[in-house]
Figure 1 (spheres, rainbow, N blue to C red):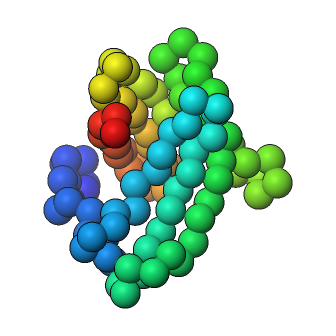
Figure 2: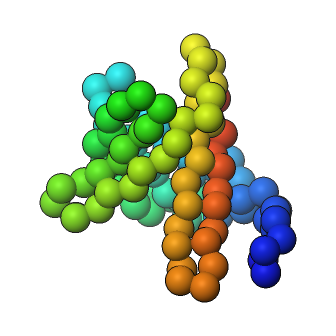
Figure 3: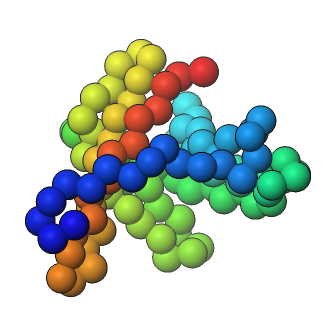
Length: 101
């Protein structure tokens, strides 16, 4: 913030026993599942993804949604991606870490 790095607390999930974590499938889909505070399924979003070099593209042509991430690490057990959101006066950078189930 104001040119300084700001690290937020870990993401708080509404349901303590079921976490809202996207799943990348071998078929090229991202399944993003959300649970409410009573741990009931609230919403499921399914996007497509593709990888070209060190870039990961997530998109949904029906919703006119597309995000591009830089792959910082990709191993058999881990995926780390970085993205940015430009808000005009501020660019918000974020990094996601995923572990294979």
